[in-house]
Length: 156
Image 1 (cartoon, helix red, strand yellow):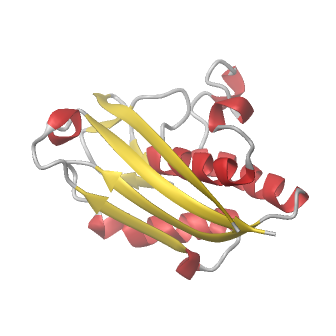
Image 2 (tube, rainbow, N blue to C red):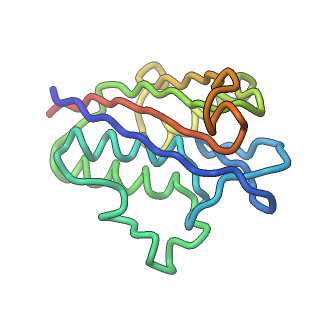
């Protein structure tokens, strides 16, 4: 068994959709980024890549490549699943925490879990998504962005 950790953070801006875990969440702002800026999927991708010793998301999907402009991050996760299969790795489990002051994310976490499990073709029980607030502290607490921590285990 190997373990990897992932982290991602994106600012909230007007004029973008808020997408987390492949779920579009109704809100007046969205995450700024080259792709769909899905910080949850980005952190999970980095955790899986880290567990395999394969670098980070930017190595495989650089933000300088126009083909990834506004791309669904679930596509990135599916491609990482393919890489895992090619090298004989399997997901043990994934645990993640989204730090977001607003909006409330609890109503959306089950759909996030379903999307992640579907992209990785694993049982839902292997995926956990939690959300917490910044309690008014720092940029997250002021509602300026969203950050995500993820940890993943992989086995051969």
